[in-house]
Amino acid sequence: MTAVLALLLLPAVAGGAFAAPAVDPPAPTPEGAQLSARPGERLTFTVASYLPGRNGDWVVSEIFIEHGTLRMNDPVITAVATVACDTPPGVYPVERTGPGGPAKTAKGDAWVTVNVADVGEAERRACPGKVAALPPDQPEERWPAGDSWPQSPWDVRTFQPGEKVTPTVMVQGYDQPITSPGFTSKPVMRGTKAVVTARAVIRCDAEPGLYEVRWVGRDDVWARYRVARTDDAARRTCQDEAAKAATGQVAPRLLGAAALAAAGVATCLLVRRRRNTFR
Image (spheres, rainbow, N blue to C red):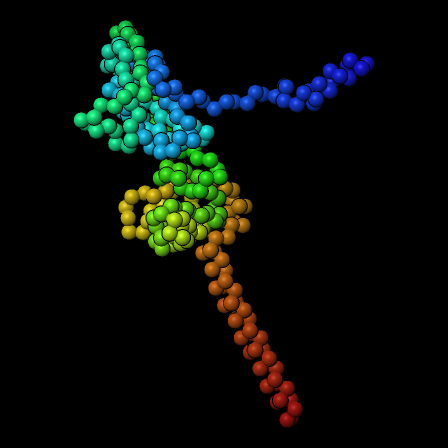
């Protein structure tokens, strides 16, 4: 009996012994590593998220259809690039450069190399269709939830209608307004010269989807965010500043009308009493 009881209690005592194992984050791509690939194959490159200044860097090689861009994908930074279908077999260098790629006159050191396999004619003919079927590269970044927003123009966070958010920026933007179709107003960035913030409120009637934020008077996109989809009940209870202002304007009008009506009734009653008194 004791043995049976011990077996029944084992999962509780062992804790996570029977739980699904935790998924480890992908390991950074080792410096100097040699990767293997076939024409039309998509490669993923990874660097540690704690390395400063890597987000936005390019991953370039002559074998890529288009350069890859390193983007925060918490807990690492990743980039994807696809090997061109007409790449001859061989070993090719891959460089990690700043945004814009390497200077035309400069030749950088290889970060890693890629050994492209020799494939037959049938596989090469099928390669363009294979590439066309690949999902598009995702520009949105996933930053740690505790980091201020936005960390980059593609640091897309999700907000609820009516939610108050705090855009934050370093060094620039003091006393300057920002604008977005999903905001109830054009908040002004205020604070110290080093860090400035604003309080923005998501409109209650903002449709779910992706929205852009710009500095007033500028065309470039400074930030992006996503408005979450909500049900009808949440929409009805949502109160943004515009709704509150409208409610605040209607209430005094109703109170004023009620007061005038009450005063009119009181006046009529007073006149009737006086008439009855003098009869």
